[in-house]
Image (cartoon, rainbow, N blue to C red; front, side, top):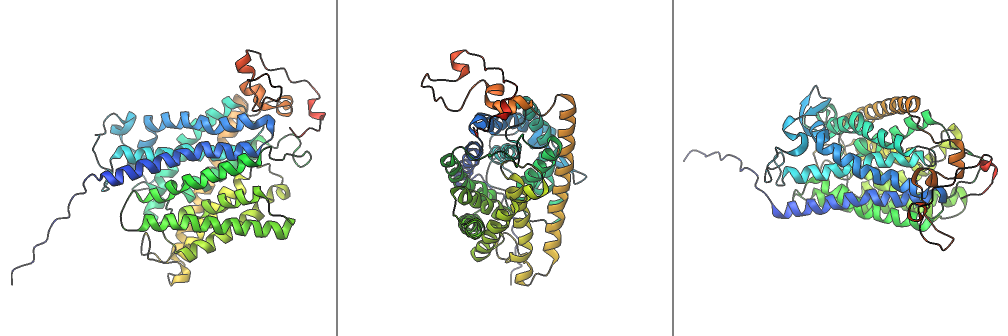
Length: 448
């Protein structure tokens, strides 16, 4: 018998199909930031609408530039001490070949980096919802630049970069439960503990001014999330990306039902805000887990997230922290749930052969998930609070009380979201400067 011949594994070659698919996914993830702006913008009062939109949109500018300059290198460059990456050839992206493939995959480095760029853009925008109505736009922009540099880029390396401590430990995070949602939710909590509550918190009505905008934003987020989740398998044709796509839909639908059921029992009504918030909670929870669980597991995760996140959003009134648009209750809590439930529902038949407790895998994966969850949470919470404290003590994080009461849109952007006079345009179009807020405006009980 002739001796067996061992053939070297074929080097991956550029796939036009996978490249096109990932570019589409990147565009879908980019859409999520404007979608988030609409989702948050509809949830605030009229006088803060434009500011809320701009707090998301500015991330598209700041983070894009920083990602090109050094962010991609910090997140995915050569590991240093399991904490940070660096590759000087990637600084400015000037030394990357057009057809150079990403790390054993069939897509160019440029495609991978632009896909991950969209994640980096979205994550600080998520934080903004907790700070509605009260933060200077300049201070927010500077916070975004500092935060992605010292928090997001390192955490992305921990979770997804070769050599990062969470990656090497075996923490499963398919598309960002820890790196995106827990990271943003913990940061939001850290900042609001420093800057304090809105004027009139727990006293004045602060109802959403446009629930149709909220529903539109939620629907666009749901749509874009398919690129966010399914695209994170980078076009591999082994079926895991398709599983993630299915689980994204399944868990989100289940979460809507769970949130609405809780809301009906607790408050007596099925609200549109509850449906939108439930959808986002399901999307958050399935993000880390969808490649490791079955569709039945996705239903369980969605239902649990819908109910628990609905309960969690009320904690701000009990504990007295002003999380304006429930970033902590939805993103931090939802991210924690999705990440930890992998330790119970992982089947061992998806993205890896790791099985959770309910599939005979014991508690080993659960402990790994706990390490990833609480490591990221603690780091982001503390560092974000320190950044907010330093900014508050230097340039000041908050607008004045008079500006907050009269309306941050006029003071920070010289515009209003809606023109009810029929004259057309805001102050910026007419050339009229915004009126100076008058003392005592806070006494007006208008829910504007």
